[in-house]
Image (cartoon, rainbow, N blue to C red):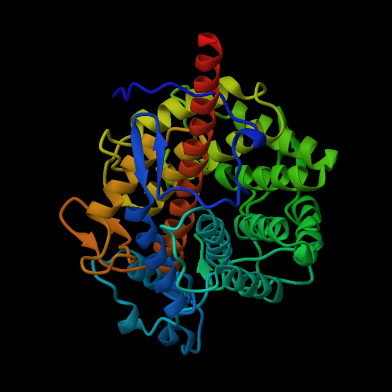
Length: 452
């Protein structure tokens, strides 16, 4: 395995990372021996969000082929045809959505990512003159949060959301009225972040809290060997289990525990993560599904990133020791097998290509949370060099293959994840600089005291 020569830093407490600092800061932030130039990355974030606003956060999405008006006009339903159309739209080297007359919609999870990115953008603007929003980011976040509340899926045990496109699975077909844990969890995170910014939006948090009932009752929270399990969505096959979706559900419970202090959320998150930790492979990663033979993916990058982030969130909010070995081994695998030294993401443990922007942005989030900001910036620089649309600072392509680039911009997959990951990276970089400035001040005072 390749070695990046980095150590695992000790997790910082909330008091160590002043995410809500309101004082205006300098336009750069130090990270170890490097300096993050907000004047360089601020315009990228601004342009990324501006692209989304111009399109009202509506655009093509991964797996949206069955929103083809041609398919929907057919007088019959055929699973094989659905799969052919869906996978053709997803996999062809060029974008064939116009040919199939695919209807673009606002993605539910994408709206949550944009809401959180706008909230972060607001915080960055309060800290640094180098970040100058061309809009009202709080107003945009409120508008998106309202939309998430209005467009939630009803008639279930609690708050939930889902993809707004039909999706043909191998054995079943998902429809827009089917909720899933991943879409739900990111909306919950957006609601809680909005509520932290403004007490007037506390109804968002109250709504998010009911997602526990959806997870427990509708997604069949149940005891399993060495922990507990939940389903990914309402039509999940009984003979397999989606690991990363369960991890995202556990992370949602951690988020709710951190906000409300509900011990039951903490216990259920622990049970789910216990089961996932027990399923970790010897090399440190996880296949997409258990059993691995039921999975269409191996240990791919962004899904392993979801799992790692869930363990990170548990460590930072609940218990730093319980999964220390699991997380250390997972991070080593993730860092050394799923990324190159220059920050390029590998698709999985055995294949470099396709190099996916979602893998990059999830890597930025994982290494940012881990305090490895230099490597997070390396990933960011790779994206800017390889997947940014030439001549458009804030627009990004979907994937780089060995011999071509898939030149389509997916609103959630490209723009939403990039806006959220970049804003988290910039906030953490500023946190690190402020922490180092405080350390330097303490050192100066101690040095002066020694001379007296």
